Image 1 (cartoon, rainbow, N blue to C red):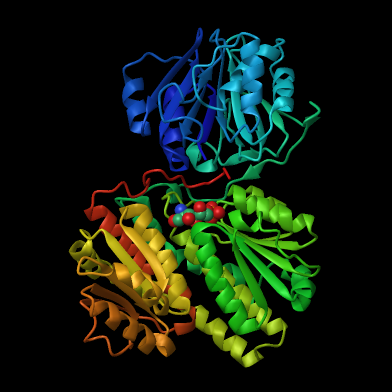
Image 2 (cartoon, protein in one colour):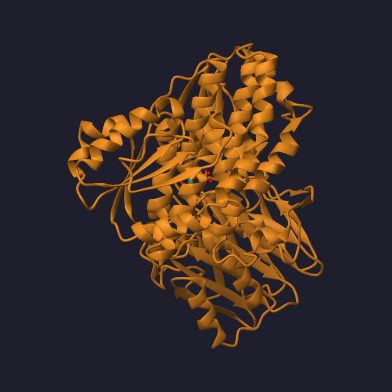
Length: 606
Ligand code: M6R
């Protein structure tokens, strides 16, 4: 979590840092700060959003051609000014920002305290700046190399030194860091959107590497301090994707981008009525014979994985185990030769998912990943990667990231089913032409926007919700419930609708809202009968159903019908109404939709 930025060049450093931090704010927003090197290093920090830092900086003279900045998601220590980054060395000659966790910081802290270093924060990070001071020998890279040898854990770190007004240094391990290349200026950042306004050319720093950043030169070193050359990459995204473009929130914009994201996936992955996964031929043999597939992911990506499991098992008849990544790595999973592991991650940086990937590989299992962010750690470390092509997703609550994951999982299931002979060529062709209709179905669902807004306004005052469904609708309920709770702070729980009566129905009363998701016609009568049970106990019942589902009149207070032609692919389309509902409930409740409290977009800590 946390976002970091660095700049060297002739432009107004403080503006570039502030803009960059604003674009990185999705990574954490407990506090922020900048350090700018003029005659000496000046640090300004503020608790809370970047807006507070901006107001504070506006009152100060901050001149200098290089600087570093940080937006924090608190791990060690409360969100206070002292715990905010950048951190100073005791003599104020060095300043650093850090993203990651230093696992051996207590041990290092004790050692440094014995040497006389004074700590002013509760953070793990502060040890880095004192170590840097301790090892400093006039050579910024050599000093950094000594520091990182002592660190255990993860870091993307930038260091400024008062003595060197023409450079700063960075290092990375298990936390992302890119180096943006400009003309007579260079940048570093946790993520490209922070600097997209200035450059699309960048280096991707790998674990163990360090870099010395001058305004007209970037020198990259390996962990033995040997200079290495690197390919310059190009960030091939429209800058508009990182802007709100007239929408009030990124989340709403991203909800409405879903048809075009699906369209991109269709044109990239479907050709000549076939699933055209580049490099799929390389895995075809493995996939063809695999007995078990393991899907591992966190949060919404895990929910996408549940739909993937459903699609793979139903179409290809291959057994799929699914695990939450933070559980998978500690449960001593049974991984057998010829098994395949699918890791799903929008950011490609989620710490638990990355560790699961490494565990699978250590056990000789081939890893396929479904990732949105190009060149992210999970993408790089996988044997095969399929990109979801959703473009930068800024809102913390995922929408287009999720639906494109589900789309690719369906495609994977179809291809697998076909190559294993579980479906005929005719069936395969029919599915492929149907899945191409999903873009239209999403567009139709989005037309329900105003209706859903009205319904959201009606129910937004309730404090508890159950979201229920069966089969695929249960998986949609899980994702719907997460959407609702993370942005509106309404307590909500998802249940397989038949399970409510096994305990939780005790909580139902006249103040409860029960939302039924009914897209699977074959199970609709069962879910409706479960909804009758809660209705009889006074609950308000709201249903999101596929058009054509009957028998709801006596049970619902309100119903929204989703116009879909493709029942099997409702795992993609079926979430749209609940994304909109959650959004409007949160808006009506005055919540900070794009940056919900306590959360961060990229969860790079365990
Ligand atoms: O980047 P990832 O897909 O690996 O992130 C996994 C979860 O943290 C993420 O899906 C999270 O649950 C979403 N913010 C929910 O909207």
